[in-house]
Length: 297
Image 1 (cartoon, helix red, strand yellow):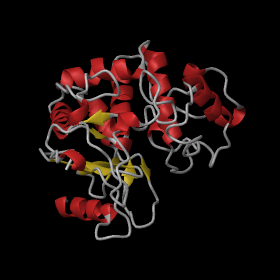
Image 2 (cartoon, rainbow, N blue to C red):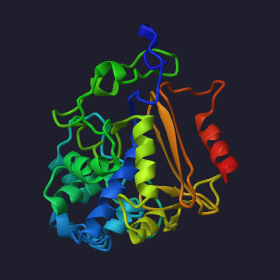
Image 3 (cartoon, rainbow, N blue to C red):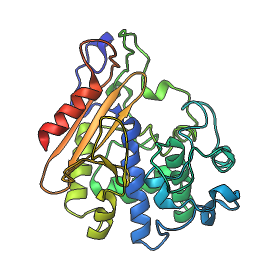
């Protein structure tokens, strides 16, 4: 049910929070800008954000895309009112968890910094760039932060692990133009199963990215090294699975969880999402997603 109080069933047009699956769109925007000659993934972040301390001068866009920048996971809570400049200042003054380029360390902050780089390179704000260069060409009519004319009743209500309503994603504390910068670029995009299918088709048929860009996006650039995930590696905005034929990205918060799986070769897409967090109960959503993707290989 998308809304239990009103007995509203979920459909392919129900709007959900994509959470960290947002990163696939941020990465697509970066590769789109590289196709246009506006940047290179080998560029250092200082070319876009100005002076950075010595310990961060080696950080490149590639490092941000692959979670190898050494930046911390986050500065503050997703819904804290952090401005673009405060996020940038916090990133460049933060304490690194590892030297740039040396190890995988998942960083939502790195993807927020990528959103700021997209704005600097394109001269457009993050959501407008996605809307013009990604969503419109793909035929995605129901994806974004605030630009779509949301019918509130179509947006799924989220529930905690006890089944208590936490409201809809837009009920959380956001700025007028979307989430604050601890979430922007790394999470929070809203979309539907139908639009996610359109994204899949636009990636598969070359509508969005040329062959070189798709190859770069789906290349296993760096192993994750995560326990229990032997052979998994990081592409650009995707996790590359061991046999390299499937890529995936999950998303999760305290109220929802979802997984997107895309076949690099072939015509397979899987997208599923739950608007209730379930922990220590009958469902282990992480294990379900791993079992599903292993079976698909």
